[in-house]
Length: 389
Image (cartoon, rainbow, N blue to C red):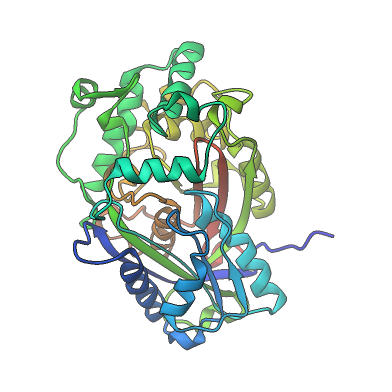
C-alpha cells in the first residue's frame, strides 16, 4: 500500500559553511558549522534533532562520526550513498520517518574540503576507483568522471545536432546567475567564445564545461507539516520525490542520451500532482554542461533532442523564460564533490523569497534534480509554498 507523502513534511531551516575554500578546516568541521546554522535557522537546538541523513565519499560509516560530532542521539539514521544525488534521495526516507512518528526533526547534512584537502585530486580519484571499480571501464583508466559525460555529450551532438555553442550557453547562463549571488565562487564575466576557446579536457567538453572544484558544507532541517508553521521562517513543503537508478557505468546505459531522470521525474510529478509547465524555478545538478541539457529533456521541459535549442538565446539565464540553477550552479557557484544538498538549499531560499538579487519573482513551485555517479543515480524533488498544498 502506498503512503501519500505529498505536503506531509516541510523544510524549516537551512545552513551553509566553508563555501569556496575552507583552508584550515576539516570536512567534519565545516559540516558541523553548516548543521548548527541550519538548526539555528529553524529555531531549534541540536538536542531537538532526532533524525539524521548524511553521506560522504570519504568514509563508508560516515553517519557514525557525524552523530558523534553533533552530540545527538537519533532514532532515525539514513546514510544511503548514491553519489551527488544522495541528499535529494534522502528526502523520501526522511519524509517516511517523520510521517510515521519515528522522529520529529531530521537534519540532512554534508561537508567536503576537496579543494583545500592535503590529498591531491589524483590521489582522491585513485582511491575512489579502488573503492568503486567499474569492470568494463576501470581497466582502460579513463579520465573519470569527465570522459563518461563527454561520451554522452558527443552522442547527443551526433544524434541531435547539438553544438558546442549550445553547451556553452549553459555555462554562460550559470555564470550570469552567479554574478547575482555574493556567495558564488566564480562571478567574473563569461562569454560563449571564452567557453569555446578554453582548454579542452575531454572532447567535446572544455574546462569551462566542467563544474568547479571547491570546499563547502550544507544542511537542512525537515519536520512534519502540521508543525511547520511554528518555526521562524516560511516553511517549504515537499510535494514530490523519487529516485531512479538504471546503471552504474556509462557503458551500461541503454541510450547515452536518456537518463533515469525520465523515471524519477515522472514519479515526482505524479506525487506532487503538477507538471513541468507548473514549475517556476529549476535547480539541476550541472556537473557538466551536458547535464543541464539532458535533464531538461528527461524532466519534460522540452522534447528529447531539443535541449540544445531550448537553452539558447538566454532562455535559462536571468530574465529568461525558465530560471535554471539560480545560485550559479555547480559550474559557477559551488561544487564540493556532491552537489545535491546545495540545489536543495537554493530551492528553499527561492520559495522562501530570501534569495536576494537573484530572487525569482512569485516563485511558488521549485524542481530540484540530483545526479550521482556517471549519469547513474537520478533523484527528483518538487517543493512548494503553502499556496500549492
